[in-house]
Image (cartoon, rainbow, N blue to C red; front, side, top):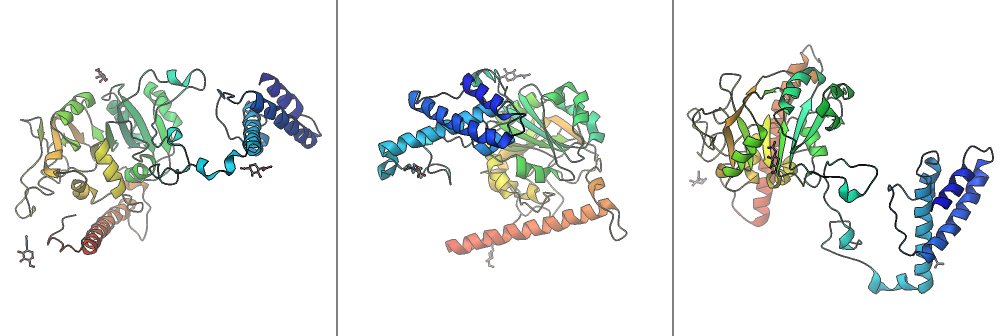
Length: 402
Ligand SMILES: *[C@@H]1O[C@H](CO)[C@@H](O)[C@H](O)[C@H]1NC(C)=O
Ligand SMILES: *[C@@H]1O[C@H](CO)[C@@H](O)[C@H](O)[C@H]1NC(C)=O
Ligand SMILES: *[C@@H]1O[C@H](CO)[C@@H](O)[C@H](O)[C@H]1NC(C)=O
């Protein structure tokens, strides 16, 4: 293999008659690879995996990848040759089709199918099985702008090493965060001017976040002085909460009774609202309800909620009222953790990402869109539900609280 690498590199680079040499080297490489394939059918490819075609070989020829690419190709060619010569692949009985594989992957032998992933960061060297001495069990994401760095830095301190930290940057400033030591082990995703739910839909697919028992999807403007994430998780487990949030310190821009912190208990799952606000004491906003600023999902709950997030309704308004559809019974599995609580600081960061239009301030346009989205989400949910009941020949229930 090393010899092949030498041939490949020395033959390919820095000479004027490059294309001719390339062809020659390719031929030599393929033939050589053929013999490797014949003589060592289990050629073990232990280095980095990179595209295997000659095209990528040409594109990457100045990097250290050349040997691998060439070898891959040679190996594949040799395999084809062998298969043809023994006449094996013409036999239908050897065609693989596994209906229980993930959709689209039915032709693969199940043993090679990896349908879930993670955010664990690996090394580029060594034995892959030794890359991860430790796998975090929880994930916390913050949607951030650099202006909130001190607040986020304080928040991150409240999450132990058992958390993978993922920042979604809406202002394009990512490298500046490296002033914090933890930033170097965090995952940074940078897309300008998008919302938390936009990122969540795109980067937190349930199959990607599958290893995490709990997923915190948080805003950037939360005061966490009285919060500890490990303690929080203990309580969530103890009380069987699949969807939860920390209690909110009363008196700062509160709208719902449900999310107010109670001073006298660990968690609560229901509340009284203003008269007439709750059609049913087990339904939002009196129960089965948390807000979307500091939501915590179990793995299973998130798998459902992710599917409910609409690609175009980026503000997520109305989602809080619909979370209950993802857990059963919702009034027991959705709740607020009182003894680990936070302060909502109401920083109008998102509004600043809007655009001044028709003489209106940016935040006004954003607010308007939020309201509009809420209505659209309710309509879609009601329509979807109606369509389902109709299809099943069931008379729909009278009231649908979205
Ligand atoms: C060998 O098999 C490959 C793929 O199965 C096919 O494309 C190719 O034409 C075959 N070659 C010969 C000589 O049969
Ligand atoms: C991290 O998780 C392990 C295993 O559950 C636990 O023993 C440890 O105490 C946790 N770390 C902290 C800081 O709580
Ligand atoms: C639903 O509507 C029907 C007729 O419109 C009415 O008889 C029934 O009482 C209603 N049920 C509830 C729970 O409101």
